[in-house]
Image 1 (cartoon, rainbow, N blue to C red):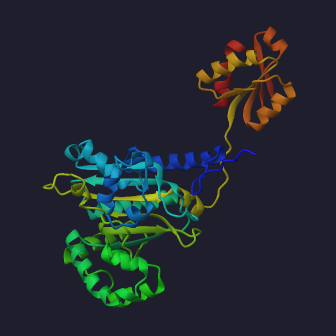
Image 2 (cartoon, one colour; image 1 turned 45 degrees about the horizontal axis):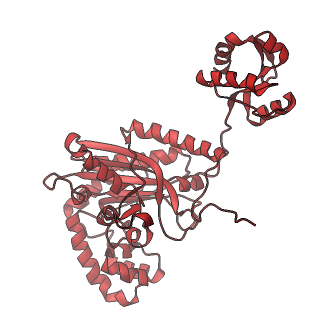
Image 3 (spheres, rainbow, N blue to C red; image 1 turned 90 degrees about the vertical axis):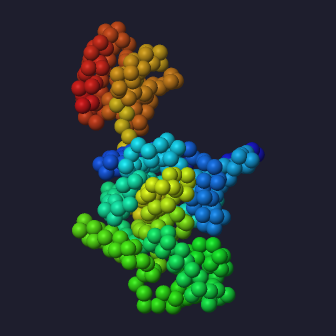
Length: 423
């Protein structure tokens, strides 16, 4: 028996009825995103591996465990994109937005890829809606608050009930260097007792130890942090973070300061955030993001110019899980052409399509009853019947499939009639 092929593990088919749900979500997303001045950008699904290593950090889990390299391009060194920020910043620089705009706001919708073991809510091919705001005018607490407000606005639009916004500050790059040394000194006292992942993180990105889920590691972190309400930031970074919080409060957006929230990417500075939702199990984040004030410089930008950047990504599959599995909208066909001979229906169906009226027909000999049944299954609004009598009189019987009312209409007037009826 021939092998039956299945969808690759960690991926899923989006079938026609589900595509309608995705289209509805994407349409709502584009409407909201454009109201914030964001423009759509579409980058390739793969980039140079070096781009991800430089932006995400050599020690990040994404680079070490999750990159899907392209086997046919090992010499060139390409990998499927695991996230969208690095590619957008690469395009921002390559296409000279940094030289022509004070602030660029982009959004993207598309697939991302990871190479780890699939589980609920974590597929190997998954889809994101993301936003990146980058530019000379981008280092602003008001912009941080706007981007956070936008993420919450989108989730509200998508029907996600009660999303929780958690925020924290990692401070400036100088703060991060200071805090990194402090964490290594304090956590080093317990290093041999930390879990294997945290011992590895200790040598790479020590901040990642703070969000470990291992119970002993959590106790160690609490002991090290002591009574502190957050990381030991400089006064200017604390003032910046307080401005972000005040602006969110003025916008009446509920949030929680989470002192152990760090995110796993090297490029984050200052504001980082995560949005969680119910119904997602242990992996309860529906979206996350943060500020990255040095990434433009690190990827080749003008070292003398101060660029600010902040962005987020929302997982589309997770949005559907969190919002509940709503029924797909019913797709309606405008007209199904019923005829004794396919050749009689074919030309008319093409004529209708060119006039912007969706139309279909049967392509094999079938009874009128069978064709009418098919029109019902396709949820056609009208059946356009071409019997011998109608063809003789150069007309068609137009049947409203909901009311069963039927009228005879001359073929020369059929497009005008249908446009009026469909409107």
